[in-house]
Length: 572
Image (cartoon, rainbow, N blue to C red; front, side):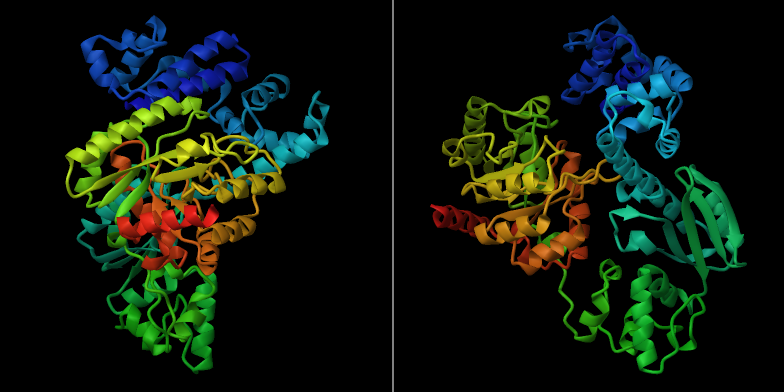
C-alpha cells in the first residue's frame, strides 16, 4: 500500500470511531496519523525497512503496528472489522455538504442511518424532523447535498474510469477478432464526468469480444445484445458497451456514438434540409466506407472535433466554417501552480525544476500555500521570503529555464488576502484561492472573490468554484460577475487540471473566453508525477473552445511579465 492509501485508511478509522461514538481522543490518534502521513515526504516502506516509523511525529506503537500490517498484507483488520460492524456505506454520509462527522454520528446513533439510502428514507418519512437541533433549513440543506450525491452515484469522474478503460482497451486490442478500436461517447468527448464507458470495435465476432472482456478484472456480466453489440458493467454497475461493427460502417458508427444526443439531432436536421437520409443506429448507405471528415463534409460541415460534439453550438459554427483552432498540449510553455515540500507537496524545488525541464517547460511558478492553510503547512511571511531567496539562487545556477516566485494565497472571508501587498509585490505570480468558508451565500462569496480580483498583485484566481468532482459541488458564486471583474482587472481564471477538480467547467470557460479573459491551465501539482496531468486541463480547455491565444501558459515569459506589470501599473 502507498502512503496515500494508508493515510486514507487511518482517516476513515478516525471518522468511523467518531460516528460510532467512541472516545474522541482515540479517534483523534488516527486523524493525526493521517495528517502526518499526508505531509510525509519519505516513503513508509523505506521507513519500515529502516525500523524508523516511530520517529514520525504522532506514530506510536499502535499506529506503527497497523502501518506494518498494511505494508505487509494490504489490509488492516481493525478497519475491516469496523466496516463489517457499521456497514460499508456509512462513510458516504460525511461526503454530503453540511454533514460533518458529528452529524453523521447522530444519524447513526439515534436513527441507525448507515447509508445514503437510509438517509433518503429518513428524509422522505420525516424521521429527521424528530431529531433535536435539526430544523427545516438544515434538513433542506442536507437534502440538497444528498440529491447531488445521488446524481453523482450514477456517474463516474473521468479519473476514476480511465484505469479500467485502459484495461478494457488493452484486452480488446489483443483480441484476434478485433481489427480496429476506439473509445467513443463521453470518454471520446473527454467529459470530466462520464455516464458510461463505450467503445467502437471493428470485429468479425462479438463472442470474441465477450471472451476478451471476461478476462478483465472488474468487468461484470459481458454478453451480446441486439445480436451485435456487447454490454457489460464495471465499477459497481457502471455501464460498459462495445459497438461491434464492420469495416464499412466503422467511422459512421463513431460519428453516431461520439456526439451527444443534441449533436446527432442537429446533424440530422442538417441532413433533412438537404434531403439526405438521416444518421442513426441504422446507418444510411451514403455514410458507409467514408471517414468522419468525409461524412461531415457530405453534410456541408467542417470536421467537428470530438470534444465539441457535446456542444449545441458546434453544428451552426461548423456550417459557418468558423470553428476554433483548438489549443494543443504542445502549445503550453509553463505551469503556474505547483506545490513543493515547503508546504504540502512531496518534492523539493530542485526536483520540481528538473522534472518540469524534462517535460519541456520554459518556465514554472512555485506557488506553495499561504499561512492560513495550516493543515497544508502554509508558509509564514518569513518562510516565504526564505523561499524567494532559494528560488533566486536556483535561477542563478540553471540554464534554459526560469523559476518564478509565487504563492497560492488564501482569499480570506472578507476578500482580503493572506499576505500583505508589500509581500505580494515581491512575487512574480500570485494565485488567489478559496480554501475555507464554503458555506457563504452567493452574494457574500461573489463579493469575496471579486475583492481578490481587484487586488493589483493577483495574477490568477485558482480553482474558481471549489468543486471536487463526485465529492463536493462548487460553492455558491455568481461566475458571470466574477468573469466581468476578471475582464475589467485583467486577471486570469484557472483551469485546474487536478483530475479531482477540473475547475472551471467548459461552459464557464467559454463564457470567460467570450469576455476576453485569459485562462491559465495549471496542474496544481503536489507530487512530481502530478506535473504530467496537464492533459486533463487541456481536455477542459478544448471543450471550452479555447485557442492558443486564450491561454496564459502559451505566452513567452517576457509576454507574461509584461501582462502582469501592465496590470499592476493599471491598478495603481
